[in-house]
Length: 553
Image (cartoon, rainbow, N blue to C red):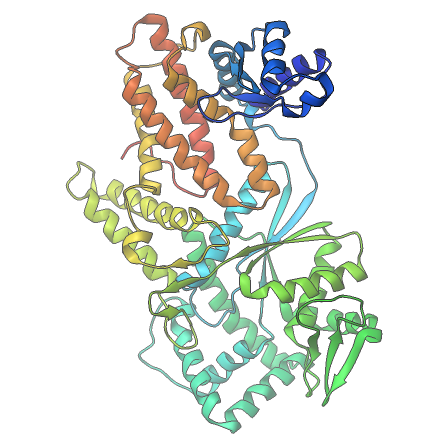
């Protein structure tokens, strides 16, 4: 149940009973909670908006939902009853009803899908963090979510790595994880392919043999790429990111060729290569040609991606792709083509801007990147530095430090609007001050500490909850369903990340101004009820963001 929506509907009902077919808006801060602007009523009633507002104030029904309804100039403002808000919001949160969203359809969300040629670097980490958080939000909102990773094992980058593994030897590479061990082979093979035509020809031969189904090569590639992929997935799991299904791109090659036949009327040739002409389809976008086949007959990623989405559309009608902003034209064409072949599918993108270093874009191939594992290790080291003077047993300190590192990295990514670029700086990414995960988690731990010191007996008295900071906190907590809904429908985890920080800030103001343990009798129990409700809600939000709630810090 959306508590604030109950009050909004009550205000709309009161206005409708006055014979006015309008709905209230959100009021500006300091002018109540909802407002009815009366400007559009002036012509009908032949009075000034201020006169109309005043007349409505005198005639409108008095109700327990609003402590006052007053005219302020041309506006009729509604002030929610603190008692009624306390009654409804505490009941909803403490009973868990606020988390019950209507069950919805199945959705397949694809994220990460990084080329399995080396470790994830920080520039790529924005994709899985955003994608995983979005999946959590959509599940909370009622969707049956399946998270997929599309493994690009049939592309040029993988063929380059495989050439390196077959032709180069580095005895000094002894990392336990294949993603770190093999990246040197990929980087050196990339350099050699730029300089030598024979290397480029051998890499193309690997691609052709793999696509034709060479069983020995397939076994070799699946083994090596599978090992790199497991290293990537281990890094993701360390960040609380899990994938439900891994789809191998090469498995879709036979189907992709059938898809190309279905699109044959829109396909043209260019020196032996084949491309789809978007104008022939009646689609006008900035780029007209999207290649499906190379001149050597091997399929290209765009064709295999079409096949992949058509395959997904057999399982779910609603598909979501988490993509870097450089994929906008690719997605626009893909959506049009898949929609042509399956008009019943809905495909939505969640675009994000890039993460870069102060000196420029990160690149695995160029060897200019900060790896995600290194970032996690550095976050852990910094957290241990902070905890070293606190009274924690060694094992407990290590666990807490790891959780702080995970939460700090995730929140530093989520707390920037998806469409805004991020320039990665160590101090900002791992800041434990200001708008940060440690601040949010510390606030949660503070609420837990209060409840440990003073056990709540389960009762509360709404009529005693009158302090402005109590009201502000309760109203903010009551906003959870609308924030979650907006975040899910707009595909924006950032909105929930901002809400988490607002909740933490407001709780600290409540804690500052409203004594809990030192309050008397029924007021103490009522404030403990607020603290308990905050803890329940805050923990839910923390988990949805993929952060780690800590009972103490």
